[in-house]
Amino acid sequence: MKDFTTGKISIPLLAFAVPMLLGNLFQQLYNLVDAVVVGYFISGDALAAVGISMSMVILLTSMLIGFTTGAAVLVAQFFGAKQFDKLKRTVSVSIIFLAGLSLLLSLVGVILAPQLLWLFGTDDYIFDDALMYMQILMAGLVCMVFYNMYTAYMRALGETRRPLYILVLSVVLSGILSVYLVAVAGLGVFGAAVSTVFSMLLAAVLSYFYAKKKLPILMVEKLTFDKELFWLIIKYGAPAALQMSLVSFAHLLITWLINDSFGAPAMAAITAVARIDGLATMPVATLSLAVSTFVAQNMGARLEDRAIKGFKIATGYMLIASVVMTGVLMLLSSQVLSLFVAYDDPNYLEIIGIGQNYMNIMVIFYFLFAFLFAFNGFFRGVGDAVIAMVFPVLSLTLRTVSAYGLVLFAGMGPEALAWSIPIGWGISSFASWIYYRKRLWVGKVATE
Image 1 (tube, one colour):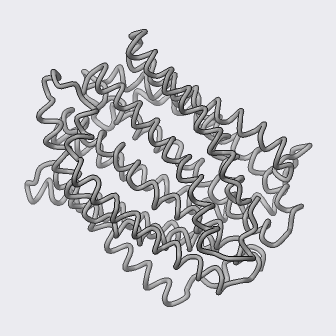
Image 2: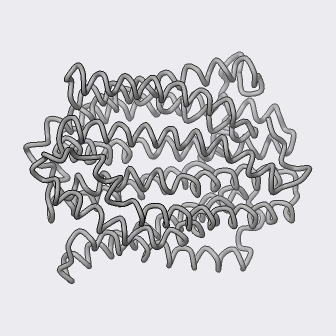
């Protein structure tokens, strides 16, 4: 465990973020390998199928991740305030709540998968693969929920190294399984889906047993329900859940626009770029989580000046990371995209061309993404859950509206989706800065 309420800030904050970053990079690397395996060993059409089905899965699971994020902020605040009894009861309530909700959403996702895929215009020749992938992932939803829950609570206590080791082990084993099932056993998209669920199951089991042995503060002997803490989890988690659901819905609308306007090659290209983008933006996203934990602990201990100082230091780190990733991807865009599709694929040149143009536009504006996520991490940490929802949702709304406008009214091609991204990032970052400067976030901490 790590108490951020005392001692130096710069190096401990970075040391806290690095294991978390490595863990998230391994997770994104697995997603990257999964997409490479599907695109290279099956086809570009299979990659498009995985891309659209993942959009559906994320839409249905984002609510759960949002409530997990809200509960983790409470855990960090109670830990900073040394209110350990409330911390344990928060864990108990969240287990009951999230387990029940995950089982319900899993059932809904499996049953309604065909209708959702049809509703958002999935092409007939990729429909079966998309349906199979989506239903398998939704059936294993509870594994993802418990893994995310325990790792989020470990981070709230300042523990990041052991979750990293657990994730590395599960990702390596799952990556080997993915290659075997897809490339050797010839199970296609089915094999890719099974390996994804296996990775989450293994990570969830290992996380639970580590917490049981090393972090007893997170373990509850008997599950109990506390109405007051439940509503606090709703208060902190509902905005994050709504935010993630709206963000996922916006991504789904963009997926529909791609399918309807440009077809499977564009879907494959943008799916590949999305996997690369997830890896490239991970340093910034991870530092945003570190900011939330640092700020939550210090605001819980009523150390506002220290919380703000840590936020400013982390923002500097995030800007440096964004500039570095911009340079790397502008130099290597064609090389990394060529990993996702075999040279003899009939759509090879079209997929690479669309993907490279899209990526080279988007990465120029990574610095705006850094600003937006720095403020978002701060607002989440101080307990201003509503505003931590508003600005990311504003960003995606502006992006979606801009994308449709540029395609339908300006007649632009797939590059319109790339130009729409900095529009959302830029306006939302500026609005976040104004809100921060006016100190409208004051007075939102649960321990006050």
